[in-house]
Length: 265
Figure (tube, one colour):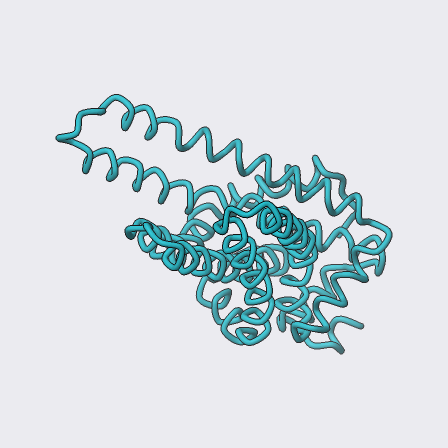
């Protein structure tokens, strides 16, 4: 483990992604494909919008937790066992659910306030969105704390705050950069599907257009998330290295690969 800058973390994220491409794609697809297909359901009411949003938040949280363990496996054992990744998430399900539920409440509140089309409600929605972004930033650290260190959700948030203290600007800029990379990859992957759909603009083939866009959305949902999620896990490692001289032996112990006595040997 060593201290890394933004470009180092992104470079390492792409390296891990390329090295374990098949396993990481399978890990992501297990959850993202069903979630994306569910999102294609008719979405004509506020209730359906809220339901689909919450489903997607929990789906991404599940993938995020599994990805954290996958990155740890890559470092410790030079392999990724998808089954073990989701087994770890299942073992931490209560804390993962609690952390994601808090974000879901904030997001749903923002959606409801925006739907009222009232100036006061719009201001409150902006506050809710800001709170959601701040919480999401700390959630990015709390998730690996739950998965790797096995803290309960409340202690995990406190631990996330502690890790970020003194490095808030690093946390914000890195997460923003990961998001921009993900957005760029989304545009690149989705553009061919958009061009095909745009070229078929007759009412008689609207269903074909929907099928093309649905395929594009599924491809993006599976191929894009691993990069920012791997990078976020590496950022968590980086903060621990800076504050605690974190090393592979400690990671191995936390993942259950070696015992404490072996780690101290």
